[in-house]
Length: 81
Image (cartoon, rainbow, N blue to C red; front, side):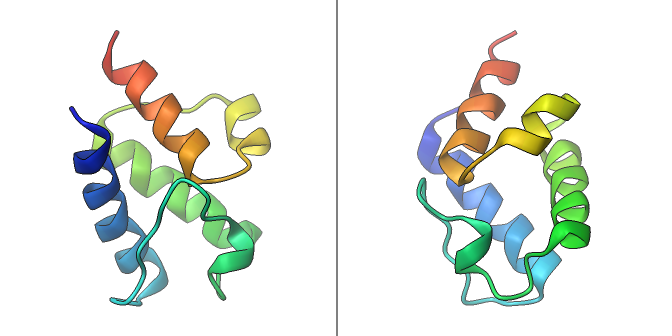
């Protein structure tokens, strides 16, 4: 799967979780860029991304991800296995 496809699918997940059809994530998107992205929504987002891509993040990944680009890198590495 190409990065562009992953970002398209992530856009849909983010739009659903944050109920905002205008969200467009990119590799530099962080919680500071999305108004309602707090710690509770972060958990909801992680679960939704895991379900969307059929993967599981480990706790270290969940707590150290700095931006959506890092999330995409983890998704790619999981899907290659």
